[in-house]
Image (cartoon, rainbow, N blue to C red; front, side, top):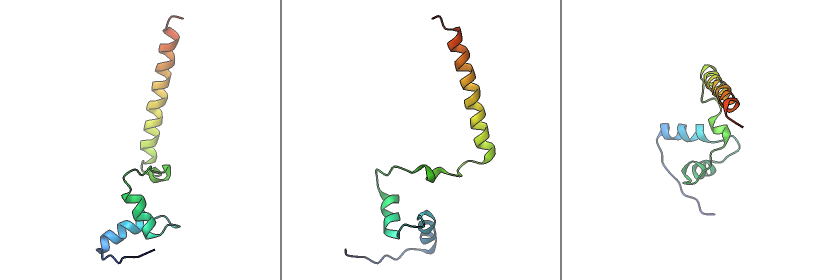
Length: 77
């Protein structure tokens, strides 16, 4: 396969290196990042929320589920 040499700024290199998986080449990382139909792995979202934010979301979901159950109980059969 043919290769090309690119010159990029240090900050862009750092960003690409940070986005690159340990077992992934730079070419593979570029393909993944630039692909228009890329489906993000759940791993891409790991750590995006703080513990407090995550717990807040879980609390809201739990409360909404309780309300939903109560509404279903009140519904005529």
